[in-house]
Image 1 (spheres, one colour):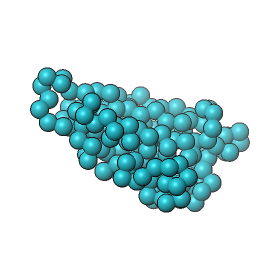
Image 2 (cartoon, one colour; image 1 turned 60 degrees about the vertical axis):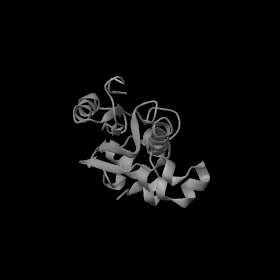
Image 3 (cartoon, one colour; image 1 turned 45 degrees about the vertical axis):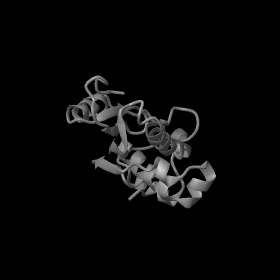
Length: 163
């Protein structure tokens, strides 16, 4: 996490949670730290979030979406420690990362996911989301998904098309 010097901070800062692209099999370095530093330069605290990829155990969904929701909740719960305004948390997602954050928002708003995973939307839903050239509909993905990775993709309609 990039944070301001606590001796110089007189106000709580917004937080940008950056979720890079990477075709669900890696995380782009170009859209991680450089984007976080750009937000930091504009007065935000910032963090680059890693999320579940196809080669990790489990599935991309709901795991990657839960990664986002857990990250939002963690920083909201620890806002004082990190000099954050808990009401000014935004997620920033690019390409596959855009799908992850938009799907996470759908999950946060879904009463089914709230009851299944035991969260309150007010704790996990970011205040704003920025999508940079997001993948919205996995059925229209622009590259082939290897057969051994297809079972890691979402099957729920609200996660396939996250618009």
